[in-house]
Amino acid sequence: MPHAVTAAEIEKAIRNVPDFPKPGIQFKDITPVLADARLFSGAIDLITEKFSPGSVDAVVGIDARGFIFAAAAATKLHAGFVPVRKKGKLPFTTIEQDYALEYGHASVAMHTDALKPGARVLLVDDLLATGGTSAAAAALVQKLGGKIVEAVFLIELKFLDGRQKLSGFPVRSLVVY
Ligand code: AMP
Image (cartoon, rainbow, N blue to C red; front, top):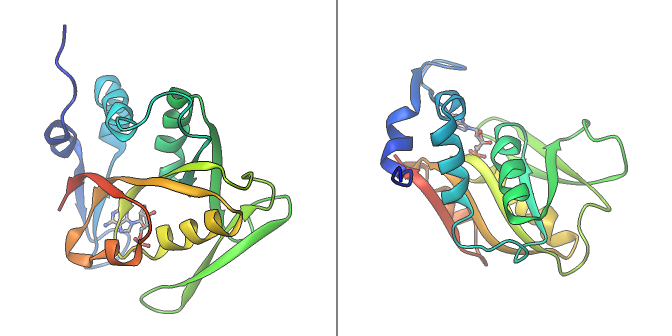
């Protein structure tokens, strides 16, 4: 039997693209992980490893790369999938949460009927940087009465200390830079 995918194998496949989308940013490109059938499904196995099917009600994924991992995790856990999108993209009534960017601010949104009060939620994104986006997504989940059982990231940029913005639930990342 082939061995289970390790975080080290995923790390090897992540492509570093310097100066994208602007000078000074090193973009972590996860498309090589997605393109490799074994690594993609192994990443989903690692993201969901703390949970059994039925133990989570919803997997909340963050626009846009978070959707890919969250949707696959949701089918594996027999849970629903809920998108958190940038403001203005969701068609139905929404709740919104502002957060600070390096310059200015941004806003994320979720449908008002996306979660039932008390829903057990796994929060998923591809990358934790400053933590602003995922903290805003967590606030939306909590506004609707959801209970975050864990926030999982494929990648964490530890030097940006995004974890410090996430409290009240466990935070885990597969690959740390
Ligand atoms: P933050 O709110 O600073 O934690 O930023 C997290 C969001 O921005 C995630 O949804 C990531 O997809 C994206 N992001 C931030 N920095 C990078 C990076 N260096 N490479 C790829 N995506 C990034």
